[in-house]
Length: 414
Image (tube, rainbow, N blue to C red):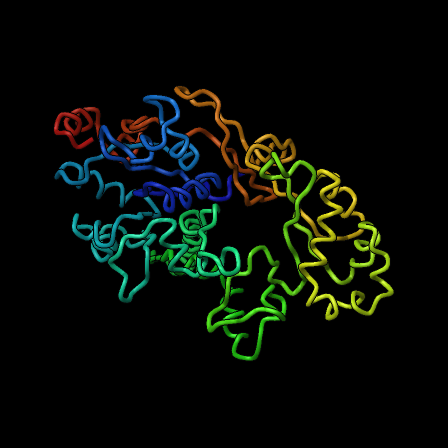
């Protein structure tokens, strides 16, 4: 079975999370990903949040699997010459530097096109053109400026960021789609093109249902939000706690053991079609004959009371028992799974969504594997490279002799 992106060469100038997420995804699909790092230092995340002294951090290893590492000083003349050869050699260049960094090195988009007209040049930026385009962006800045934080959190309380890295990893996913689209277009046009993803745009794309709700506000209150019918709506799409937001009321309720286990909870959606089964299961068959309860419209003003009654029942069972009872009744529900539970879940190991990888210095570590499954192009997840591990090998591939490599080393270019 062939790898889907076999033969595609990627010049990976990325660091930290947004760019490496993108290039790792492409490497899992079989692209040859050459990660360019500063000599002696490397990607800053190698040394961040280290849990074992002097060993590449999990922050680095979990974002840089399946790549080869080349150290290169792109500020030196020899380094610039090698970098030029790499641009000639590769199909795609990916970077997430601060705005204008590569331009200042002398590698503008125009110059890159002169060196290799087939090159696809892909960048993560914080913002698109506009008042903030020169600002630096981090994960939580992207969540705040893209609409996620303002629409997340308890009603009447502060905005909240989410634990999902929708700014960094989310933008990396968007950029990967842009790159494969540009590669496909190149088969027709013969030319590379510029691919840009702004983190603000990526987060806003993931928040599109909240932009939907913003527009609906003009036509009256949002009846599926907990603020209806007893609360107030302002001018902007509000925070809604754990409401489902899809027109079917949902909430997180406590399960047995919640007093000591912070994740002993389950999400339950009271979908109209499955309501009868749910009412019977929790001992409220009386609701089915009662006009105050037996239609979705009648239940709307009583959602808090309804979920209180559901919770009385769920607190007598653990979250998996609740799941076992409600699933056959077609009641949509999901236990709150902790990172510990996910790390130990056998089915995720079986599908390659969680993978154990062996590293020469760290030993075994867990990483998230490829979330995108292709039937004929399985993804193998390999360990991350040591700093500069493949420097000589890559320099030989782009045409440097042993003497050239030795000279580059003595000049401090690699």
